[in-house]
Image (tube, rainbow, N blue to C red; front, side, top):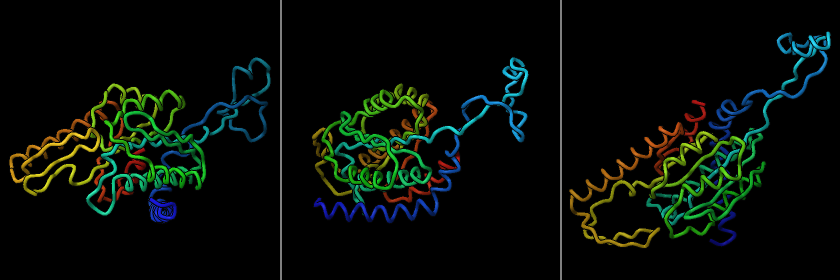
Length: 287
């Protein structure tokens, strides 16, 4: 993509996603995540009008005059976007490639967080972590992340979700909102999901194209694995073969849903032709 094409694409995504975000997502995000609790700040002498329930009775008894605990709202949250840039994400049979669809979702999440004064960071990974953009605030930062997702070199290698989560947990110790965007075509260690969901609030988002699940009858076809380069001839005219393939994909989805549920993490299965904003709205509403 030329620079002018990248700028145009990013601008288009900003316009589309900001409309959706402001109309449906930002308020729900704010309700779900603003003010995650109160933390202790200090103790000071009682002043007229202070709430009685804030009195620190231990210190009051020790000094024989009333003291109150001063509480403050917890600091802003940090949102981390973990985006799969393995070659299978650079694919699409509808109006968008998976990478473009992911860029829109990332933009909506990013603008929602920005409206809540939260920081957003980005990790691009495939067989290893390729790029890390530290969490920051602001519109320009969100637009920069969108550009990175669109222009990344999508790697012909098996995706290692485990490594991405381990890397993220090694750097970010404080509890964060973690959105894992991938097509989940490759195996992973489910134990890592359990560890990650204990430390962070984790949502896995499987982004798929309709042809990932159902291959049409086009006769004999040479299928190519974008990540491993492996090729195989198949007879797509065989109803049995198409049924077996579709059932295997359904089972993979069921396994994913079960792994995330057993890890106390959330999971979404999103077709690139669907409106992701409604799914995110429902997710924020549950929180």
